[in-house]
Image (cartoon, rainbow, N blue to C red; front, side, top):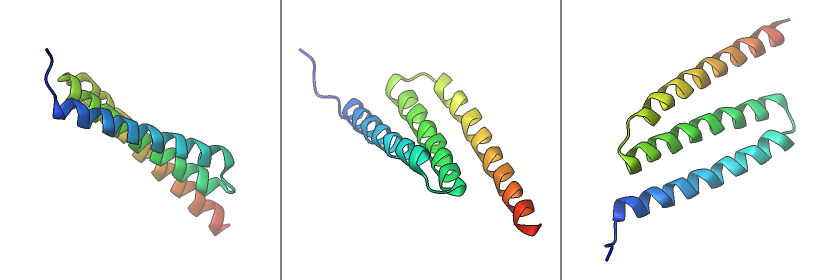
Length: 93
């Protein structure tokens, strides 16, 4: 007989909500009326993926997803900075 595991239930709920957020961001990424909207949606998708990796690491007890989450977070940050610099140069012309 298996007992109720609140940590696993919370992890499943969190993964479901993060997955729903990813779906909403994907719709905004596809339909976004402007380039900044699409970039913000892509950045939010990266943040949600980091959240998914963190929840997976918590649920499974493995630390490897946390390493991948750090890499994804760093790349998302650098991408956002690069886009901001691109917009800054484009506006200043």
